[in-house]
Length: 134
Image 1 (tube, helix red, strand yellow):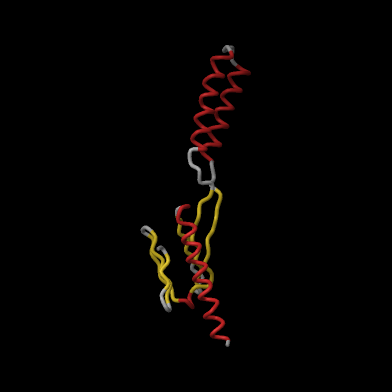
Image 2: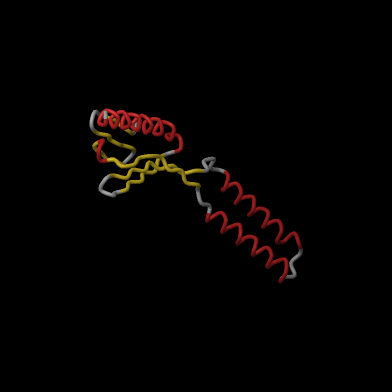
């Protein structure tokens, strides 16, 4: 379990990333979800398209000499783009009272477990705040 919640501390240990805070030091904690960027695939697609248009407009090649390689390149780019089924990248985000921010990248398969642990921490923090004000 990446998050370990003790009586007065919260400890995070995931792969090589470790941090520990007291309950009162954490100002904000949560999961961030960012969409993956496909700059390499999009750039390759644009380059293949540019070369194909160049061959179509400015060369005397027959159609099959530039269309078949272009289609093969498009097929390779599409298989590379869709070979990874995860569309998002997830981070655990922590901001403390000292204005330090920590972002730790987590795997998509661990997102549900970490999300439940963060919800549990937030519930405990809410209960602690109610007991302080009551």
